[in-house]
Image (cartoon, rainbow, N blue to C red; front, side, top):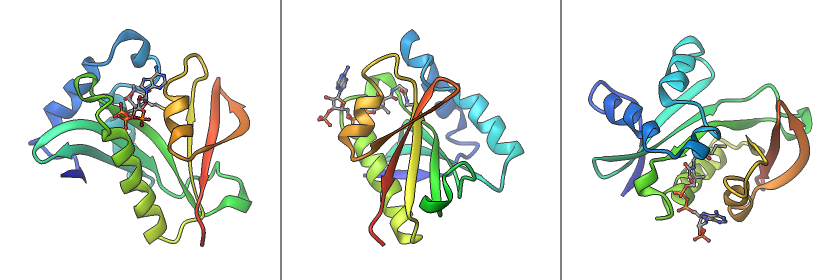
Length: 154
Ligand SMILES: CC(C)(COP(=O)(O)OP(=O)(O)OC[C@H]1O[C@@H](n2cnc3c(N)ncnc32)[C@H](O)[C@@H]1OP(=O)(O)O)[C@@H](O)C(=O)NCCC(=O)NCCS
């Protein structure tokens, strides 16, 4: 069963090592998990880092920015997917989709209006992955990244 779990002393090493499994192109799409965890440490109030586990196997990492300020006023409140990655050996097995489903449920339980993400447009992935999972292209770009959004019925 896929679950999102807190990063602990027990799963930390697996979480850090997952980044090394990405290919060179994929490493350009996402920061190292060590960097994300350092950012989470200095932004404890807004960062929500979680390992993605299948039973006890660590297959990925996701970090939300909770109640992100950058989201336009009319789509507040919303969370922003700050980081997301699935280890190379575990990709294309549906873990990414299932993770987004868990995050969508979390947002809906919290009564949020939106979920945002941003990505480079250099390659078909991960843009296509988000579009396939219901995100809409906002057309807005900043720092070379396109912003995508998912709106929830409230
Ligand atoms: C993007 C990412 C999170 C997706 O995770 P995943 O577990 O492989 O995703 P899933 O298995 O749920 O879905 C993959 C889908 O993309 C499709 N796909 C895979 N490679 C593709 C490609 N090059 N072009 C188009 N579609 C592709 C698969 O066929 C599958 O489609 P389906 O849902 O219709 O079956 C993962 O590839 C990843 O970690 N990439 C590197 C880091 C990254 O880019 N992170 C995002 C930062 S914004």
